[in-house]
Image 1: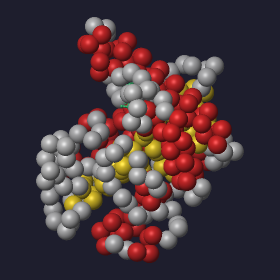
Image 2: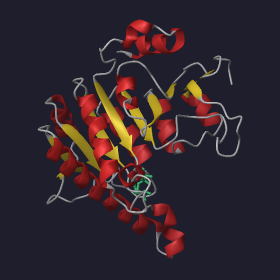
Image 3: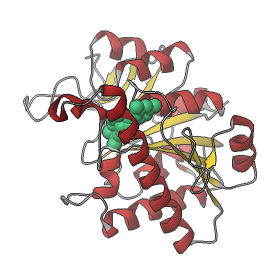
Length: 271
Ligand code: UDP
């Protein structure tokens, strides 16, 4: 696999990795619902969606197979169940269905802008609008070059799409999870909004991130990634070309992997 070469470029600044040769063959992009809303109050924003399409197609153009797990937070999140005085499981059902709406939007936008084949799969039964998620079928779509949008998380309540992203990346043998953040450069050792001294990690081990309770992704997702050895890149999706850069070994943002060395951007001292 490409991970050793990738770590080399991270650790030693190997310029050769910057050549237009992808370091990954298959990736899983975790896109939050917020990415579809942009900075607006609306759930879906045309400019934000155009940006998503451009970023995804720029990675696909490298020949990389791409699966996407889309969130639903722009429409509904199960965590608000108490505010509505409804059962958590019902709220989670709504959240999962919200991701299906986003998935259909992505299919419509991607197919409207390219001749790429796009498949939307759902972990809940919604056969009129999305194929059921069947692992081997998703694998086959990816092998044939389709962009596969995975909706409804894993179809179970009390979880989020972060967890679904890591699980699907493992199931589908993706080389890495690309965890897109909006307006956040990566993983910091403290909340940069509260602490102006907060440092951005270049890389950190998944076990260390869990121990330090760095809250950039849900804990179950991080534990799963650590236990099944799935690397994660956390990066600013708003910065054009950053996802493509990661796939070319330029590695903006933070790289997390089991046993990865802790490095920070200014001087690479251990944080
Ligand atoms: N959800 C769920 N099971 C899953 C994935 C998601 O119940 O496997 C629900 C949960 O309520 C969650 C919502 O779907 O809050 C939307 O997903 P998420 O919050 O992860 O969206 P994001 O924050 O990425 O936009």
